[in-house]
Image (tube, rainbow, N blue to C red; front, side, top):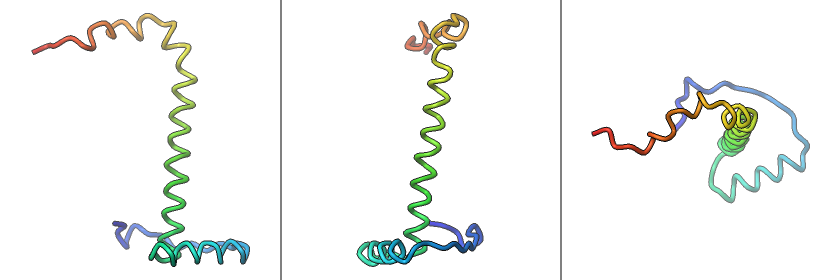
Length: 82
């Protein structure tokens, strides 16, 4: 649950049809308009961060697959050290 002191008030304009659409969704889900918009923003943020990680992994793939120093210890990753 969000803590009140962590929330920041913002204002923005959206077309009337989008407001009506979001109002209908909020009502059908039993949440406030603000809670719905926070959820939408959180989902967008999660997807954006996930894509950034995927892009970084893709950018490093060539280096990881070609640089033997980066993969030197993968052979022992599954070994039991106990």
